Length: 100
Image (tube, rainbow, N blue to C red):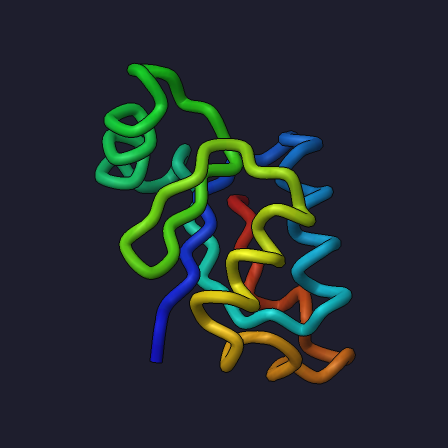
């Protein structure tokens, strides 16, 4: 199965917006807090011109830096439709890990 990875950080409004869009569609994803994982932080810097721009998303060999929710959902439906609608409403936000 294709993996969708969302790199994020606490307090990021764009990350919350993306999380909400993914949750409404029941999209399965892994969320990695770049403030907690140095390797993730370095990966984001490597694809974002040295910046820690989040959300940064990796899917099917493609990386998007701060994608619009509709852009990402379109890509997920195209490259990994098996990820859409798999999470029940009661657990949709549980994959979003928060520091602390």
